Length: 114
Image 1 (cartoon, rainbow, N blue to C red):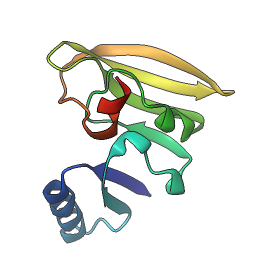
Image 2: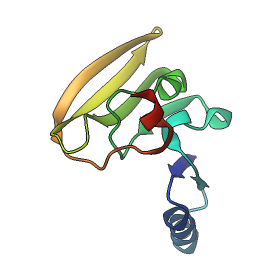
Image 3: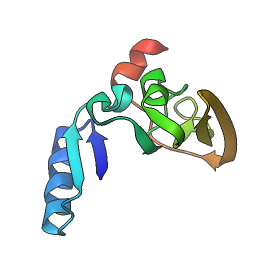
Image 4: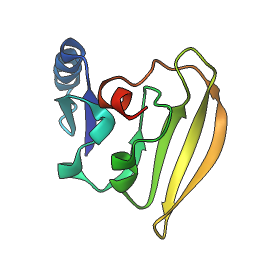
């Protein structure tokens, strides 16, 4: 199963329709703010974040399964960001640098946590 959250309503609707048209029946699209993740579907083996927060949202770490991996671009808007691999082992979080990147900033609730 694959779950995706898109904050922009039109993009969420288009993504759902496109995936359905292509025959992907194992992908569930939700329109909303990804900051809180999708606790009803947790825990997750893999979380991929495609917008950059300055820090990893704690709710996403909490929803990561034991042995799970989270890939996130970290950094401020307009700066070089760090693509980071986060692994959760025995409840501990390990961060590994992957490469420098530039992503759009995460919007929504994350802005309230700066």
